Image 1 (spheres, rainbow, N blue to C red):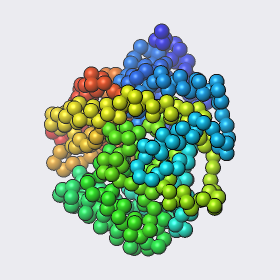
Image 2 (image 1 turned 30 degrees about the vertical axis):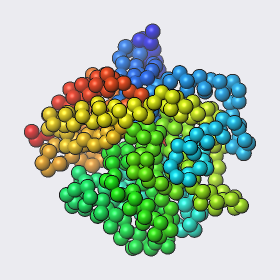
Image 3 (image 1 turned 60 degrees about the vertical axis):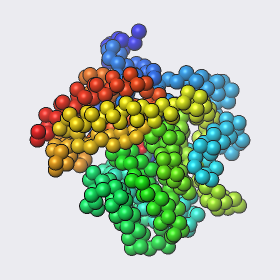
Image 4 (image 1 turned 90 degrees about the vertical axis):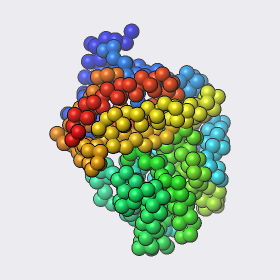
Length: 450
Ligand code: PLP
């Protein structure tokens, strides 16, 4: 019913007339006109269907158009569509209760935002006020959002254009054995050296001036970097020693992506503040937030918290979070993500890596994987240079185009392709996607030394 190229052309023309797009040169982009979506798929007006191996921006953990979540939004809209944050609203309290129940440790108070960046902004504000200290340490190869503090904390090239006022932000190297900054030869050594590096940084910045260390539990856009065992515990211990607030950013890694509710659960890590968004309600309505420890919440027991948002805890967003979390529980969606990772994506991607000269490393867990593409498996030279653009980026652009032609929608960043389908993906859909990926990688192979 949706296949009507004339309509598709009209939808695209209307977009090009007035919509200003994120992160893009406006006259260069060519956005696909989308007619609909369901589960792991979406389709255009030309009769093309795509298997969504991106979960959009790694947020549709529950897949597209989950009927229970759609119904909850419709019911809430009819009941109470909007209300200011200062009031007690049943569905907001229920969303907070459910999230507090899932988050680790004593992170039992929830400050709601409209997305991930605002969650990070507020977590940093809380840490600075709680400690009375100015500095925040964050990792290179990180992404924390595109608002003022969040983009300064970001450790990838998206920061560069907005780095004029990075007051108090200092970057460090996190563990990444495949491209080790520490000349480490195994995970244990990488872990020890990364912790020593962070401790040196704290010492030279002055521990009494450091409010917080912020980390993505598993680094997302920067390459699905799974921390070695012991790293999160080491950072926790360092923070405790110096009275530094430990913030885990679970905006991308949280709510099932890694095969657990939070990535922190894999290592029993308990931060002081945890930021979330994306998977909390799969982005059906904008929502994010900060889960706050008892100790930090107590800082604002009698002293007002100086921050707020008109739509904090929006009833439609909260209703969709309640429905999402309940559906994820009832339908064992987090368990499915773990199962797909262990029995389909992990083995399938490792097999693909053996057969393709362009695949340097496979890493990940759950439905959160990356292929690190290289020109040469021995030298590990990335298939495209860091932050490549234009002709330099042709190998990755060719590869992405091959995926799309075959009906697979990839998530591509620099020299990597990430495999980040919904947590609801079935075994047969995951296998179908691996088959399409396998074919498209032959295009990347042509750009290798092999
Ligand atoms: N933090 C992490 C780890 C993210 O991956 C993102 C978005 O990709 C953000 C924060 C920013 O979230 P938002 O785009 O909702 O502001």
